[in-house]
Image 1 (tube, rainbow, N blue to C red):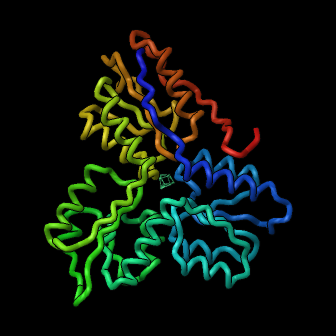
Image 2 (cartoon, rainbow, N blue to C red; image 1 turned 45 degrees about the vertical axis):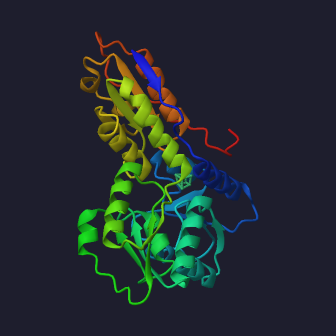
Image 3 (spheres, helix red, strand yellow; image 1 turned 60 degrees about the horizontal axis):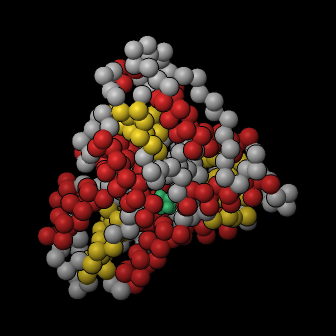
Length: 311
Ligand code: SF4
């Protein structure tokens, strides 16, 4: 079967830096044990399992404040998604050793929020409810940052602006196309609002690549974890912008033969938190796939070589 390996795809610089930091912390005997990560360092369970083998426990399920309450001693690593200042302060007060893997692009968004709030603005933050990145961003100015996910949220929003202004800020991993529509809707309601479109470059170029390259395919497979926002957005871009059927798979084991029925060309891409090995396995499997004699899903080799692991 012909395979379009969409490029660029997969790991972004923020994820590589975060995992390199975690690996370095795990190898350093001077770092106090136990070592925890508050939340999944990236939304990929294979990465989480690999870190566990190296002695880093991922705390998951609940917001960062709740996760931190489970830690009594040792070391915490904050994830690439960023964390509220209140959480950093609480960790410091507990006497924990802290490492911050926040992506520089997320750090910049936090600074935009602090600066605009200091200038008297109310912030409309366009992001995904329940995702850790908005949680950290909203924590920069509790009560002044208002999370909206869609037009219904905007319609329900009641801002007490007074003599101040409005600033619109976005999460880094959203769909460019959805976000443009929602920003336009915000602007029509608050025409004087300043706009800070913070969708990061890595997200933009991966979405653009799918939008352009997937058009030549009959079906699109996106390799990524179900909780990865940028992976889910790639599926959405493939469906809504490239106009192709698209599916999210965790690994080669999730491929269903019925998706490939009648397909001659398959495009493959991956979220920014997806290990390249998983994507390469999918590509190799599809290249040798014979639709006349589909053998079902191949057995995945899930031994990973993570950035900084030295193995
Ligand atoms: S997707 Fe963008 S903001 Fe998120 S870690 Fe990667 S580079 Fe940073």
